[in-house]
Length: 177
Image: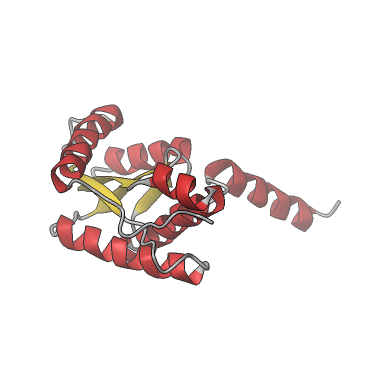
């Protein structure tokens, strides 16, 4: 085996170990490591938690492949809206987190942009025109003394508070034939 091939295989294994296979985003472990490195270097910014709205209903009405397409579409939308400088990870089934260096000041505008992009990506993947995947978003400014766990707890509370106050309901979802 050549040295060049060995380097290529090592790089591929490292990429697989650090990313979520469905979305290509960072996995939870890799996100935490990179986030803690940024924090150790005193990088300031915003911590974001995003959750796909009504994923269970999408799975039940359209099937799990449509649910996968919704998750992938939201991942693509987060990458597009938050940009390359941001750390973005899929940390659970339909849950994402991100660290945006410098911060996000218009959270509602960002949420709207993510929803528009998610709907666009979903349609490109062959999704039904009746369904527009959307996200609920929680946001916290990163304070130097808060741990990853504390930020998740605070941001999660913000996310679910917003989700309840909006009474998220899927738009015109017909049943699957």
